[in-house]
Structures are given as C-alpha cells and as structure tokens.
Length: 261
Image 1: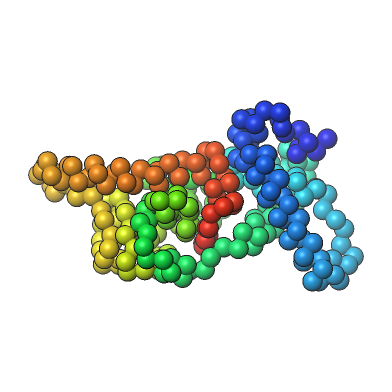
Image 2: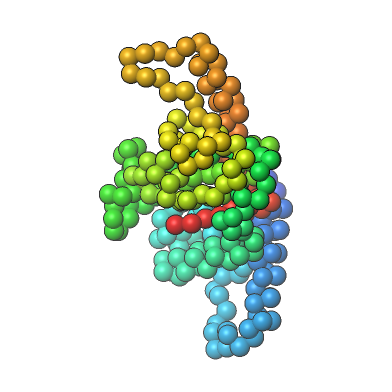
C-alpha cells in the first residue's frame, strides 16, 4: 500500500496535520500537476523516450514534497517512509517543487508596482534546517541553530502572500530586505517592525514602531502609536504561523508567491 493510500481521509484534522493541506486542496493541486504533465507530454512527445516511469505515483510524489515542506525531516528518513533511496527522494522533491512553482503562475518582481491603493505588511520568520555541509556559519543564527529566513510581504486586507524571499539565518532582517531589492509602488503603505530601522531610505511611505532611546522611556503617545501599529501588523504574524505549522495551501493555492534564493 502506498503512503498516499494510508492517509487518514476519514479524519480531516489528522489529514491536515500530516499533509499541511486539506484533502480537497491536495486533490486540486494534484489535478493541476497532472494537467501540467499532460501538456508537457503533448508539447514534447519524444523527450521521455527510453525513460522509465517514476516508481511513485503522482499522488505520492506530491505527498512527499508537501510532507517535506510541512515537517522538514531528513531526506534519509523521508526516503525510508516512501521506500526509495535518499538520492531519488531528493530528485523527486526538487522536480515536484519546480513544477509547483510553474503551475501556480507566480508573478514577476514588478507585480507590486501595479496597484498602489493597498496596505502591505512585511516580516521575517526563521525556519530550522539541517546543518549545511558547506558555509555553516552563514546559516547559524542568534537562536543557536542553523536556519533560513523567509521574508513575507502580505496584503493586510486579503492576507494574500505577495512575495516570499529567502535569506540565510545569520542575516539581519533588514539585510534580507535590502538584498531582495523589493520593487514597491511609491503610494503603497508598508507596515514593518522595529527590525527594519532605515526602511524610509528605501521606501518613504513606510510605518515603523517608535523605538525607545537609551536611558529614556517612551511617552504615552508613542506607546499608543506602537500599540495601534501592532494591531495592524498582527495579521502577518498569523500568516507566518500558518505557513510554519498548518496550512501549506496558503503557499500554493489561491495566493501569489515569489521565491528567490
């Protein structure tokens, strides 16, 4: 019996916890992948001549990819679950992840220049990773572990993820922003936290909390301002949490994402 066939389809909550998607969203995404593969075969009918079909069905390849993104196990453990070699496991993940990016028709870097009448929020979260074989120091964060940083930009009104940029764990949040060279319409209001000091030099229409100076305390007006700003920014914290722990559908279905390395 394949791993996909063993999923608890009669228990939606367990299904969501294991896969990161509801069964409906999983099947929707699987259909889009199947249609994409059929289109590629029709366009290039001879490219697969002489090759054997994958040992795993499309459902299991998608499940492998989402399981890796949801739980981040080591590849050797993931390969054991699916009964394949570690190298083949990595190959399936890499191919399927590339296809997911293509079927969702992700926007280009200029997408955020188009609609100025919007309020955006930006934040960076950290995701633990295995210790890299090379350049370990660059990924070792202040949290005493190896991580990658994911910078999300969301629309406050719709909670749609408009941009995802990945950085190394040792980078400061503001350094990730500067390296991303994010293109924003001048009229877009961007909400950020105190880790983005200096944002005004890159985007004038940005709002940051008032930072307490050394040896001084914030006034009542400054505290009220920071509290009001945090109430507007709290939505991106909720999106960050869902991306980490529960609904990978926010990354692949119904939203626009852009992933760069």
